[in-house]
Image (cartoon, rainbow, N blue to C red; front, side):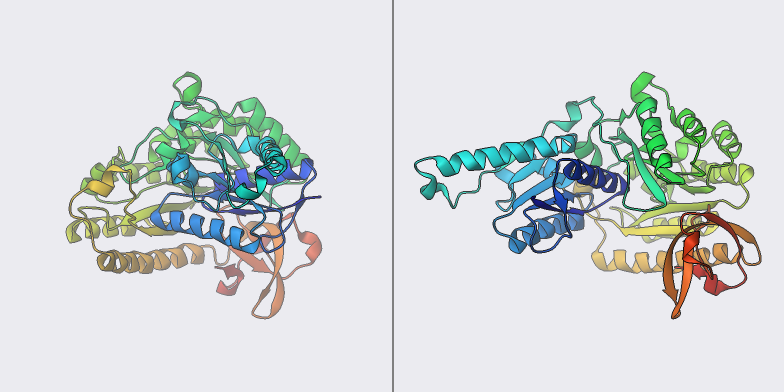
Length: 446
């Protein structure tokens, strides 16, 4: 039995795809082992969202080759999709699986093994023994309209399941490479999503997280209209599922009708991640974000109108090309005004192949670091204030695992707002939803 090790880099969509590849390997008879020495096959699902992600992808590929020089090294996903040609393929890679071709993993592994066996049998095999020939399974992703069919029955987490329902993006923000490596919007059929959710519910999962590259665009490739709300409502009907959480949303999808409909669903978690990127209108325009800060703020107000104290989280980029000190202060003041639960801060990363990479007035790394520190400090202050608003209140916690908190074994899990709570209790509570009164700060885990 061949041993296969997998490593994931990047987003929750990548994580879903990695877990799906692992299930394929298990069904094909491979033994799944930790990502260290001793595997026969190493599969790295790569990321290319930033230059740092590129570097991490290369490092993991070289690490795999070093751990076993005779192993088959498979590079899948966005980093190799961005390379796109055999000439750019790192010599340490044996198999390249582009996006939309991860479903072909087993077939391509068999093809590679057959080619390698044939090479060994050839008369001049000895002369070719030092030549690594890689297999390329990659396509012009921008031309495809096919949604890659992958399926999960038992994700890595024991209580919460991330479900990929959509791929691709049509937005073309000026800083982002993703539309070029993930292609245009392609949505999974409602029937296929529901089939997977029913399977997961049958296997004991109580919470599902609907995710995608551009989740808000779910269904526009069906008929030009968004269908995310109807998908959520359909998932809500499935017995056994007690919580529904959403991945990152674009502000444009938030309307009174959308928020009102979600608030009518008892299983819906009041936890919304709305991508912001900047609180300055001039910066948003250069980013091609297609909304103003005022419009964004109204979307937050709509959610707060229909949900009681929802957790609003976001992403902010600092040091975008041309961002002046005045623009940064506008962005900082806007983050202060919105009162996010969590603000994820990213220093702008110059990404070759995007429009922003060629923009004038690039901000120095030193200045990016300073601005990042300012927003991180503000974000910590806002996080603490939001969490403390739950002191003295009773919350519902989906129990996930036991952990040592200040040397004491405690049960831990998340509220519907995704606040991690610790409390005294028995291990048998795992994967149950219990009511916990938050009496002190020590119960809130970071």
